[in-house]
Length: 183
Image 1 (tube, helix red, strand yellow):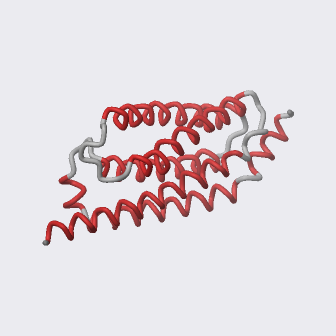
Image 2 (cartoon, helix red, strand yellow):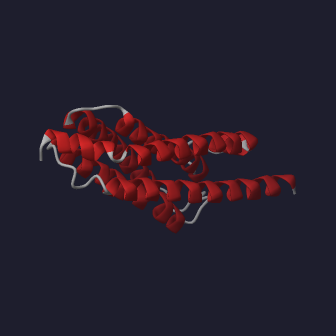
Image 3 (cartoon, rainbow, N blue to C red):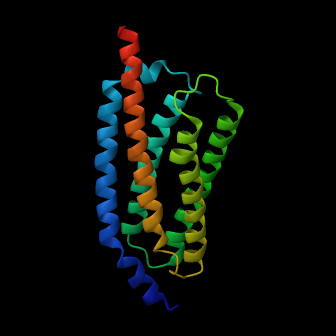
């Protein structure tokens, strides 16, 4: 693939990344508001608890989506300007997700705030697949190819849906805990 078609291909996604970056930044702001309203319950949760983990991962996933938007809207005339950041972020987040898997597998159900299936379906599986996909996209881009750039849509949509769904579950669970406290 010629360099000019690589640049044109990447630039054709600019509007998509402007939209995802704007949406993600807005959602990060709303997460801050929601967490602030319930900071007492979240702060009380042990660092290893499902509540704390889910709150942190929701925030991180929205920041990753925002980071992908930044990476794609920064003018770059070479595959390395896009490929290396994707590869690095994908590898870092996959390593981070591996730690979450270990923590999840070690916790045999003691003090779970959420059903294990919810943590698997809503956090661990989407993160694992999405960040592995980011690594594949980054590696492809480093070769000057754009054949997997369309997969970014799946990654961003899945991370967004998972983060919004997890936010809902988190806020509902925190509200339940607050009600129990008051009774």
